[in-house]
Length: 168
Image (cartoon, rainbow, N blue to C red; front, side):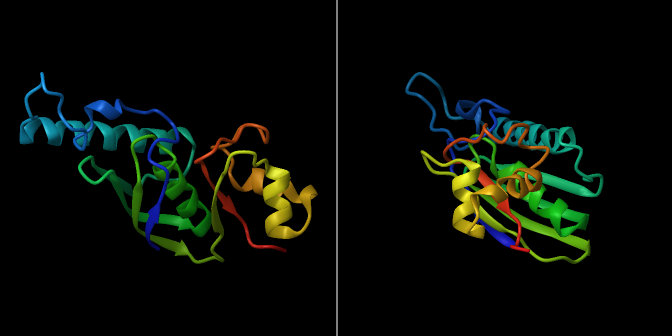
């Protein structure tokens, strides 16, 4: 699928963004060593992979790496279907300190791709549903397409990226 851009300061707070390799050292702190940078990137990669697993997505054949200098997550491996692929990309991108996801996954069973939408201030699922489907009452389709990352249709936030399944 390629690269996807996300809002860096929005999303799950899985690791300390000040400790990421891309953070500029303060005047009082020395620049981190290459070993420190690698350790921080590995810690962030593990946190993101654990988050994917907590969402009960089939990710046993997936690997994740984080580059703090570019705020990029690279995710690779094989997933069972297009929906799982898109949800894993969203799990990676909807993490604080992540600006970009490099999707290098392959899919065992191809399917139709969903659109991605970044939530703006004042949005709700009904408004987004009206925009994409012409019917505000189709909001539950968007909610279901973003489970288990969404647990309540009223709990979305600006900067969050959502899957918008194709219209029926």
